[in-house]
Length: 484
Image 1: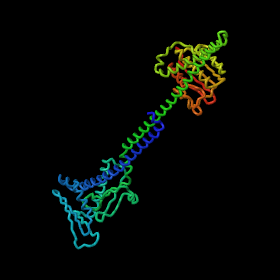
Image 2: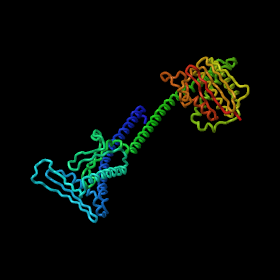
Image 3: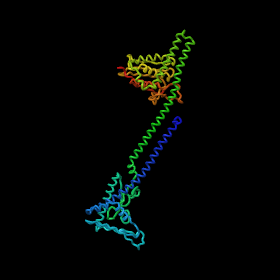
Image 4: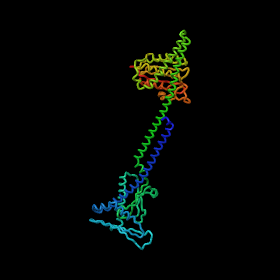
């Protein structure tokens, strides 16, 4: 999909994430509204159920009651009839409620009287008969039943998983006026939920109303699993988009690096080939066979360029066969110091041409490792070649080697431009090159040299690190396990 530029991927992914979050927010809001409405229904049902049980408990204690008695007073039909009787407020209508509870039978009478001559507004009343109890006894029973009703409501709310603070208010039975409450008046008026008014016994002194100050916290607690799953989905989506963006960015950087690599490698291959061709042509054209000194000079140049060409071919082969490198290596006893001397000697012409100097500081005793001489020699050549290319003319490098316990430690320290701390790990990545001004590099390179170095050192069970600051040169530290 070449038409789909990566610059379109970023806004599309961000838009998708925003839309996903928006849809989740809308869904949670709708769920919150529906859950809150359901909570109000559940609270109302809890109070009405509590009223049924409270009425039954208040009258069943007077004696043994039969199954029919229990079935009737615990039925929703009885509650509806009682509520309709309690809420009867019609001008000129008088309702009379009377009950009698005996040992073998029970009587409940509801009478409604119409006064055809009454014309006064709100002239309605309810006559209460108290089974011959004294007014003080009725008050005592009513106080008992209030506590019974409130405790029953608490149990019903606990079944719903609601343990938040709640209060109640009492209303006078006749005129339906507020007589008392367990909550300050200001909070009562600002409360988010007020239940209906329910009778809780047959004495008809008060009606009970449940008051809940705040419902949002209850709803949010009940929605906790929905909220968690929604947040988890948003988080996972965000993480997935993050890695997708990172993948797109890495692929773009890899593609750019690969294009740069192709361009640079073409130049790198052409340069030594052209140099060798010119050298051979000069030998033939100017008959340098008769001038041994110049002939040797041109042969040294050609040998150096062939060595450099061989190294670049090795890099490209290693790029596609990294996984097979460990199998392809031929480990043998190798003297690191002898190898360093050989590499420096073979690069002497290149060092002289760039007016560079390499100082060797070697240990008195040989430092042996089990390694592949070809690959390890290429590592040394890479590090010196990089210093020559990037440090410019009059480069100075200090190479030291020492045996320390079970390790051989090598330092390649130059006086080049140095490397910023943020690039210390990245310089070993494949195709990576330190960004230059206007993305144009004055020094041609493939971005494979240090990557190859790290791979080879790793295959030998060693490690490589860098100490460098801009303007203070670079120090590459290699640690290899010494031969046992």
